[in-house]
Length: 241
Image (tube, rainbow, N blue to C red; front, side, top):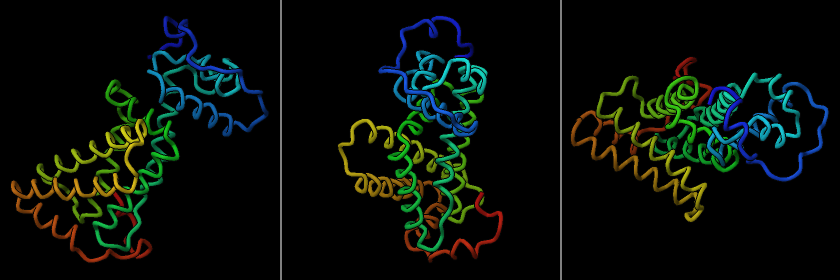
């Protein structure tokens, strides 16, 4: 993606409609608007076909201003994905007080709250991952997945998963991501039903994994039948992974 010059910059603009009127905004607010416009475009088009001019037009800003804040399209793309990742991670902050399985379901609901409210950011974040698995973009996506894995492990009271559990949890995270993208695209299943199905998939995957690792069976029993955890304000500092 790199430079903003070349075929991608000379291609027909992907943004449509009249340029919004420019407004006086603070530096932070202008950066947020530029990143939001970029996320919206990157969620609907491959990044190579989105130009700086497209982003500037969608945000009602000048091309020069985009360069001033971000330096180029690669820098803007990474900044926009980091913004989306930070928003998603904020939604996944641990909230204790229920059974482990209930906590997992609650975290999944907050995850899909983000998917629904920030569709462009979610789509751009995940669609930017597979094709850009190395470098800064890959690091942003991997960091979100790692954070989600750590949160799930905390809910399961696991400090370090064995290979069977690790593969199982990472497979489930991939299923959740795919389900989120599919739901955004089609909306042909009710969200609560999708969330229940994904919780059921977690239980089913752990059930299969338990056949290969006895410790996973104990974890599954704790997940489904375990005691409610302490309220968040009673947990020890620094334990949320």
